Image (cartoon, rainbow, N blue to C red; front, side):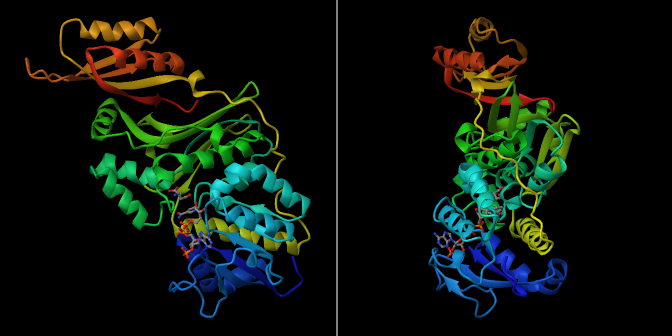
Length: 436
Ligand code: NAP
Ligand code: HSE
């Protein structure tokens, strides 16, 4: 970092998060400079549309739509990337690191797809790439993972790491909100990604789980390594059954390191109502980590929104300025470039909730349980809702299994859907009873 009295900060993006960062740099200028030891100066802002009114930005600040110049400008020491998307964000980060600028990013997509190489590039150029805001919004999780828990061998991650879907699921379960209304509210609150299908289809959570798993297990886990299902297929009946059975539905992100291989998955799950993650509601996120020394430790806080995300970004900026003032470096990240085998979800063993519609005739239940029995899937309970006799309408059947292998359950689902007495597609939701 240069010897100037001020630290030049380039802001790439001035949307929900960028506006929060710009406002905080102005509103807390004195407190931040006291803590950092130098004044933080906004050197310029990159946006797509330079003609849009920007009330959050200080008057007269340099606005540009050219992603090439600002990240490498001479008066810039730290680049804060909050534009999102893979490109041009990735190119901006690479050129900034190559020019000796420190980079702070909230971009989980870039970190989940290119993180290990970018960390190596930063190390090669003697600068820091910090990304606390990329996972869990305002929750400090990257710092603790690479610094405070470094003495552990971490083998498990369980998390609720998408604020938008957690907000939606909470509103739908507790207040009966519709999917559409809940999503609109999450967007209005600034929680959702520019393309909210990243949230509802589980991609955002898969990016974040890839980042957490990479740091936790010290090997490369990329987003395509993560098995992924979103929340679109859930409906009111699932929330009612979950509640009646003592569960809460969450978009679970879970990964394990086992015998040198990684399994990582994001999908809706029935969590027992006493499960620590079941109590994490609204925009809150939580991450549970299992280390050989610490056991299970949980980190919780607001997972999205301008202010919590700004908190993480400013923390990274201050750490960089203070570390460079004392001639040191921010905590070095472990080398995470090793690839290990990725286990398919077919090898998962857990309990399952299956919901199907079947014609209410003698022998139907025997056919259904017969298929599950042949696949070695043991039943814990069956619920059948009564329908009027001779109505000709299919009855709803809900089955809870004991622990079973996913491959066997998926094969049973295929065979059940092929039965003439079963109407339409089955619904499958995995059930998690405890942390381990
Ligand atoms: P946003 O509101 O859509 O803002 C994106 C900003 O980047 C806008 O100012 C946009 O310019 C600018 N931008 C986008 N593409 C650009 C391009 N090609 N060239 C120049 N400027 C470009 O997004 P956000 O919610 O602030 O999220 C930003 C990043 O933070 C994303 O990586 C997101 O995943 C991450 N994040 C967000 C949250 C959250 O709660 N929102 C939390 C944690 C992390 P215009 O204003 O001209 O359109
Ligand atoms: N869209 C993301 C979420 C923003 O809802 O969690 C925080 O990363």
